[in-house]
Image (cartoon, rainbow, N blue to C red; front, top):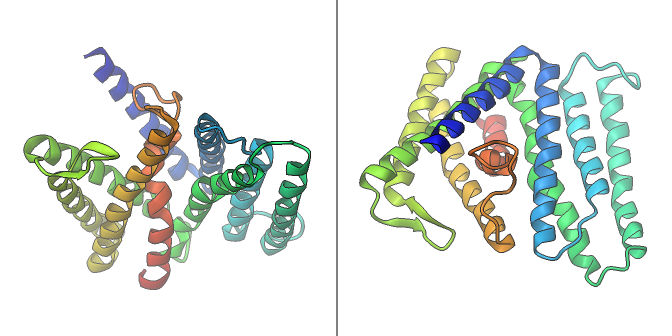
Length: 278
């Protein structure tokens, strides 16, 4: 009961902080993404180190933040630093490109036994964590001509609805294991229950945001399927590292990767879906 209370309280606080940052302003949303990127990449590099690799944490974090910043600059009309948003994007991209050869140069002086693995895990941290959070910068504007935090908020609601319905259905009637090697508790019944819950939330989003029902149902379907795969991918990383949670930042929930694993894999798919459908 104590663990349940801690988990519930921290979950409520997390929801308030995340949704509040999204709704408050474009800048608070950007700050939230930056914080999640820093913590998420730090947790990922810790998982890699638990496996014996030695990623270049500093360069990886800088690259991840630059990637996020230049995408945020590209979608923001308020940034006048370095002349314009497009100018900031171009300069940020140039700096990001320079970090790649610098990473190889630094590895020359680290004298590690497996430099290839160290460079690979450094880059993977950027791709796995920073890139999805960077793509989320576009969610509030892709389906709308103006800044619309409701789009991002309902994307999160869809992911949460998938988790809640999958848990409830799986606990009630779950019998057939979905992916027992990585997640013994997940069932096919819970999987389909989560999809139904996510699509239902997508229809609610269409109603509230005055969007197309078919388009939002499709977005929810894509987010649900890829979100489950994202959860399994993070479980794969944790199992390889021999840990239960990616971190301990959120009491009762683990780390940022534990809470946002579904979004990390689903975000690229949802972004492409928004571009071509919405």
